[in-house]
View (tube, rainbow, N blue to C red):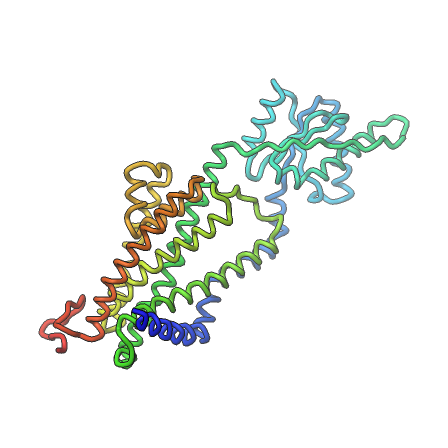
Length: 408
């Protein structure tokens, strides 16, 4: 076994160096970034138009006289600083209990509408809203209040500035649950996207080396199982390289767009643990799919047969994703438990659970369970791969032309 592992590492280094240090792999890394770069460019070009659409609004609950003073101060400042320099002011007359009205305005005006509500008049102003909403308009509202107080002063004296009290409101439990569900679905989709485009490279790599007789040369030098494991390890290392490049680009984009991207609530386990579990589940899913791809791909003799195999595998993976997604709202149901136990849907189901639940022990069990299935699938797929390469014992082949028997 030690010799097989040592030979597998040699094969892995060979495949990794031959693939990563090539122009094709560089283009492969850049290809997913092109839509993102184009989107950032077009977003910058249309920033002036978007600024109008995304202009925040602050609701002002005040009596007519106070509301008129605040509105006049806002209009005066807008005339000097520009209409986009300050948030819109939406004057609202008092209607019933103030806390109830504030909650209603924040609930009805979410998204591109009301981001905060101003109450308390000119003497005890209070700004209520989410932390992000208050942070984006707090300073501007303070300037409007000070200007209104100055305009109200009859003797022309400069009144002392007043402090605008900020009252951030926590997100409702329903909002957190909805946002975490969105994070769970996004994590599942990203997991499927990465595994499909990265594990799918194994099929094309396999058919290239089979057609060029490289597999036969390697099989004469090292054990066939070492070739199988080496290719699997190499593709996993290449996948980590791609994820590091794309993740670094995404992090750079978030840094450059700081303050313009709305903050998402953290997953139930927090972002560091969620990302670590995402990497672990990607590894187990990639090994499961990669072993399956190498084992089945070794049966193909032409690129056409590779295409015939890739379609059902892709459709099957989409079905597995749909199965895991259907259990998002009820992880303790029979469907949720089934999705967590089925090897290929387990990474999707457990990643969604990491976004929605705080318990860690189910993930330890799930990773151990998935690794057990990785060992089983690798063993079976290695047997298929060995028979395909050596063509020994009249082995089973997925594609066999009528009238043509396997070579002895």
